[in-house]
Length: 451
Image (tube, rainbow, N blue to C red; front, side):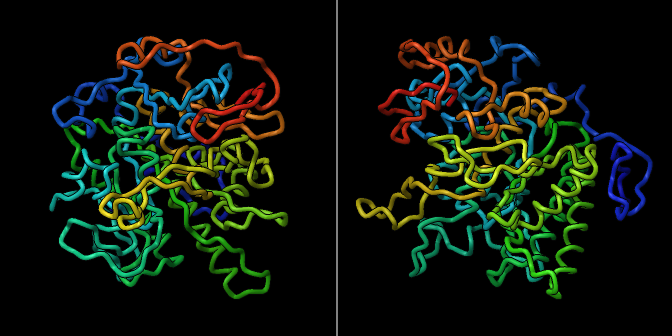
């Protein structure tokens, strides 16, 4: 395959190999609204075009309210002039959020038998499906999550009971019936090999395979029927520990970091946005990919403009879970996250996959990727810049947390249209944190701030 020309604004690390003539991302926006795929939410309904005008208050958009009671969804939907308690468990998304965007979930796989993916299952199980990518030496070829066979699909459950499975959890934050950008085109990228191991090589190969997959989609979409506008990539794994300075592994991981950055440059040329978690302790960043990316961006401000390291907050308070890193501009919820659980872990009904609560630094990357996908489908040329403009502190000393930009002015019309009771207006008092709740958007206390 011929190497594509790359656009780096002339600001890149000296070790990066000489690149070809500059070229901006090849996104045909003129044809992006002519044809649309069918919505995974309703197979009989054409995928709608966003009616929101770039930069307005979204008064022309079709906003969908949902009272899931998921605190992380409410936090992302909450404007600066509304307290979290007054969200009352609601969250709001735009119809068509994520349309024309491919969402790559680099993780352990996906359990398509879960109820979250009911309306998307046919595409995930089709023999000709392009929604699965396998990476690494001895790649896996099973459509599963971390090697677990699925209940109801011809295999018995294994004897062990792992209460969570990461790929399915992360995918549910973007896609499925509870995702914040459910009109994305979901692609599962399995990082475990066929022997169940996750290695540095297989993780790096995930991004190479994503690039190949993007080029395949572009080749198949010569008539622009896919309405391709861009892609988002989210991952929670990769190397989490920094080798000692005299470790023979250090040079290997430094070389791998450079290779990853070079692949990211090529992905950015295809309008792909990549999100990585940050893992920290008092001595500094412990995730090597995050460290390599942050160091490169600090030295070269115009480099990797479509790649971001995402920070984690305590969802109920808006406080950072780690030291606030100056290079991390966006933070997202990481605790008390609602997610799908495994079959057999619900003692009341073992045949039902339960909803469970969990925490982890991988959730912020998935949530941020979802908001980015919504921004791309909304028409923003620079979605990360817009997200940075919209992000705000949920507590005075906290970091800037993502917001989906859907203003309160749209809520009344949306709730009336979709049969929800009207908004009960309550006074809002600025200052403080106002995040006194029970994790369901409801709570007691004297909330007084930007939450």
